[in-house]
Image (cartoon, rainbow, N blue to C red; front, side):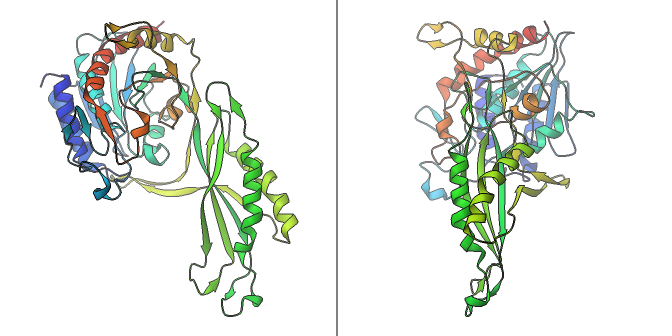
Length: 400
């Protein structure tokens, strides 16, 4: 099979037709592996978690990794979509469906671009598509682990940028605040202490915390908001003795688990103390038991790291020049350089592992995780052509 834009679009349609929630990517992985093998990749394999890696061998120059995650978010009510979410419909100049721009469309482009680099690339081109990005990035954390993981000289993340070059984003942490009361039968509430009565104090503390968020000159301010309440026992005829408030915190690259939890305690505990004898609130980073389709399982913190590249970094500068700004006359001047609004696997490759990382792909961020998800095919064709210039430029810059 010869790599091409049209071939990438057909491949993207196939990918959209295969649902792939986190932990359920196996069928999609088989399709991606088959495409890489048909395209003539020199090496193709999957690892313990089911991440897909394909390598096109180049010369002795710097290696570059292209990456787009395999998993997707749920489609919700199919009747709310203009086009069926898993049909891969092409209409009105767009590819429609769940994953069209987040991220199966860009994944297909990267896979064909990698194959197109055969015989051209100065160094190896690694195309690595990980699992579990949508739930904290377990796949990329594993792919780039210090002991035996991939270590490219630079990474290009295929999350949509509308043709700009992305250089970072805020991270995300899920924090749980738990307070305890005394359970009792709902018919005699005076014999119990309802843990839900502590919620006004907790929420007042969260509100104070939200008003005191730090700001980065490029990424903007961090933000935190309460997004869930859980009470146990769950029976509705029982006064609950435990209430947990969950926070969604969009964090800056300098934030750590320890500093985040300390700030929550400082904001919430005085409010609780003023509201009565509730004791010390339990504050922790939320975790979940994640299970890959391969059977591998691990208790994982729900934390996606942030990162920020220096706009003057040689890889960023080379990427901006190679991509350029789209105009009616072709490419005019360097591309716009900016952060993403959402988190990506770049938080692992750059924020944690320190590998120079940028993002480039077609698609509008506002369509991500919505029932209007779509990818403009004219923009995708343009981006495919720019990728053919971007990969060699990043390799050269990373090798300096």
